[in-house]
Every structure is written in C-alpha cells, then in structure tokens.
Image (cartoon, helix red, strand yellow):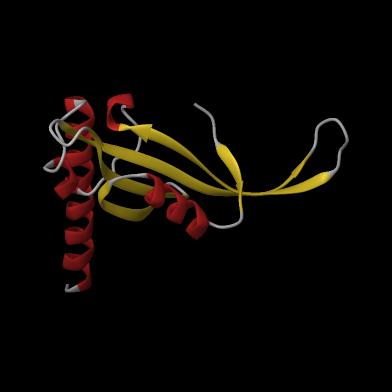
Length: 132
C-alpha cells in the first residue's frame, strides 16, 4: 500500500478518515516524526460487528520536483493506512484500544505493551532525576 497524498492539511485528512469510518474511538499521536491517527472502527453487520484497530500515518510532503519536467509542485499532506493485522511498526496505540477490539496480531500487541512500559519507565527516571 502506498501513500494517498494531495490533502491541504492534517486536519482535513483526519476529518475525512473519521467521516468514512464507524469509529468508536480515535487518538492522534506524534511518533517518529509523523502524526499517527489510531482508531477502533466497527465493520460488518449489526448482528456480527467486527472491531479492528487501524493506524493512519499522516505527514506533510511539501514541495517536490517532478522527475520529468523538473517543475516544483506542492504535494501537501498525505496518509497511509494499516490495520493491526498488518503488524505496523508503530506502537503508540493507546492501551485501552487493545481491550476494545479482538486481537489480530498478538505479537504486535506485545510490542505495544512493551512500548508503553518503556515510555513509562523513561518518564519515571526523568521525574526521579528532577527531584534529586
């Protein structure tokens, strides 16, 4: 899957994504120099709904030069979407989202939990140094 580009702003991308999904929860987080929109979305039928975690990487592409004409073009903002089952290499998914959807990749969920533990420990170390 590639990037879908040509949007005027990050807010426009988020608005369009949320309008298209039956979204139960969402959170926009800054990670690895990108904005990451996490959602828990519902698909399927009323009788058999299926909740999944989706990850949308959002970034500003800015000005790019056309390889053939060498003309400069403002590509604007774009996004790339991934589901949990694709095992995204991003782990900032809110922990409470894991309880809202059935697991599609337990290894990825272990990485998400480990990420949050590392982040908490780093914050605790920083706090303890500040109070010394």
